Length: 165
Image (tube, rainbow, N blue to C red; front, side, top):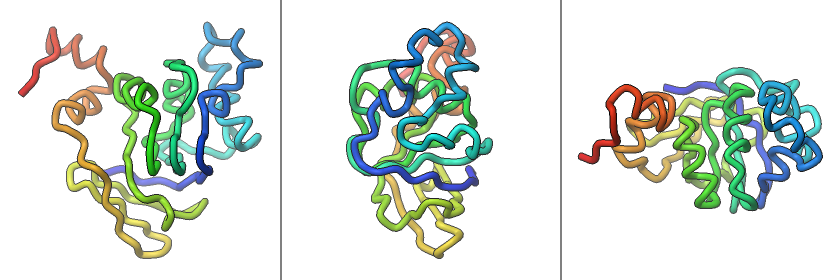
């Protein structure tokens, strides 16, 4: 179970919104780069987000370049999952490989500041603020195993290779 507060953003949040290009020189200093996560979408996000919170987006979350740093600094900031109506394919894969769940669902009934409880196995999101229950597209079992280990590299270190069921 994941529990936290929703930070809601609109449609088309790009990797440039997530990690602004003006901070490219910090790619070798990820803790410092994480202090600027989502800065162009919400200048105070990095100061407000708490461990366990969620980013909620609209359509086409994570579009743009295939920067692996984007989902990584989101995770480093304490975000436990991203919820969005749709997600750029490469961002989705990078996030899963780094151990950050991305849940595709209708986010219209989630408001900024709502408290959410997510059951990854059941595929449900309970909005504790307004009482709504949402569902999300099931995450394949293989991806759940990667997420459970904290990402693809920890999974491979533990099991020696990627195993398909």
